[in-house]
Length: 344
Ligand code: SF4
Image: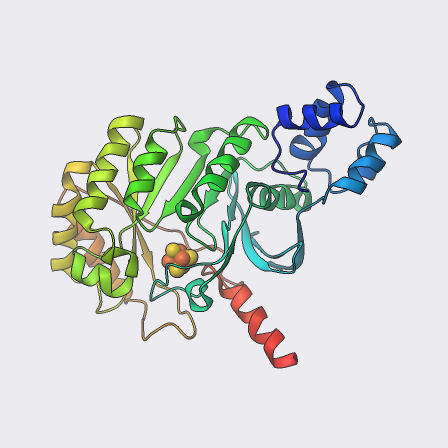
């Protein structure tokens, strides 16, 4: 049974059932979520009898970093092993004013986006809420620093694992005390789940991967677009904005000669204008084994941005972090899998 992933109330109930007073559950929650204790040995204010019961009944922790690639700019990419031997990735990103962790929500991914390393192997399994939260705790313990921001942008589609993702969001805001506004969830655009999330009362930041200005091109690079059209997706986005009063960031992966022309920028602006959208441009990073995509030249990137700005769209470009480690999602695990196969 998993210890991380239980709310404070659930931990109180668990310790009561083991014959201890409820306040021990609150102390346990403090050790797990606030102090990121990786073993019961650290939980020195809990009686040894309770610690022994926990060791016997629970798996703790749920993740273990088998590799940590440290970049010159302070970013750290963790190859995280789960208790069943499956592996996912998370990335720690330090900034001047905040510390952020990008986490995975699934082992692999069923969405099969044409440009993504994670999609290569398909979906193996969903992560539990505890496994998601533990990626944050693992980074916190390794960095000896409180994490202020969490981004759901690692391996997997968070809204395809809806229940566990929402539980993890509630644990991060509740048990870890991270502001909902400091949590960003990125989705390929599962329109019905965006509507459901809007009704959860969680004022998080939503990022939608749009990557194309029309259905035909979108469907070529993102199979999910064959199920949910852009009209359906943008209607769900409108619903999100109405319900949460939060703007949406549209992520746009810029692929040379695929979706990077000034005409496409104009079409995109036309589709997004009424949403007061922010568009975050992400120039492509090469992914081995994923089609023949290339990063556009700087001139072309700037022209695309300029065109959007002229159409009154707010544009940002994702800062390139972790240059000396494999930067795109799923790459480290992909490399590791190849290594495993070679040595097997
Ligand atoms: S980009 Fe995201 S949703 Fe698409 S295959 Fe990769 S992990 Fe899955």
